[in-house]
Length: 414
Image (cartoon, rainbow, N blue to C red; front, side, top):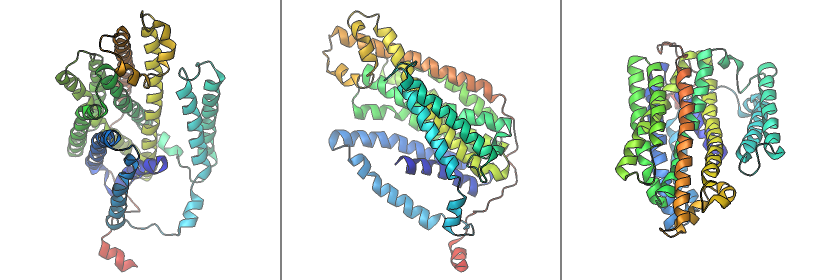
């Protein structure tokens, strides 16, 4: 599922790059982002209903009709000009060494990152050894890609432009921000507000719906005006403001209150979904459009993994720091901080008048505030970096080897 899902994300954006001229790409990326956000709204809600009313296995079974529908739609409607040649020579040209080395290196690094401060101390060899090995592997991979690979999966040319490099970092930061938002807000709703699974899934709708609307509107405006830098800077500025607003969430926040506090962050992340990839495409050479789109997706996915891992470590460390000074849960601070998510079921089972329950809720609330400040800090750094992105015209020559062809034309070629 990881391989298939990751391939779908990357190939969808690469296909838009192949089929749509640069001037109109923002609009279609907005449509693509809206489909993703629609799934983000319906997926958790449907999953929550299935878990509570049926069995978790249905989460996987129910995906089969959608997969079949997508397969049929691609087969009958995505008619692109075929690239000459058979499959086997194309597979032999693929950079298997670079892909394997990069994947293995990142897995090692992320394992160490996820273990640090959770399963093992940051100074323990179980933490730093896989991180060091992963970092060394990434360095080896880049050296191989730049010097030895005949057709590298990461072409050196995509790093020749400063604006592209900055935008790759913005993509990574955007992935970290979005997944920190989606992942850790669930903890707020369940551990601080005591919402059930279905209600928690519904509570994600303010972000999801605003991401859809903001992404489409930003894409249309960028297409019409040719301006994307203003939207990127505005998006990061509102993101900083939005996470500062989230720090106001506590146990006493009303439903209307948390809905309002969630709207700005949904708008800002939606704007960034469609404008950052356009900035990358505008800064690069036409022949680098495909690799740049793929590396953009890679950076965003890497940011998601790193953001959640580092965010989880910050949350746990802050939880321990807050809990250790409390009377009831202080002696258990170390134990509780290592099971932040698993502790929620125990928390909900405690009597409403329990002193332990009151202190646990306070510890969750305070640690989440620190996390939102951390993400706001990342967003502030990216806001500053966004001012170094140069403007390029969207009215550039468009070249593609795989344009759409009419089905009648395709049949005549057979």
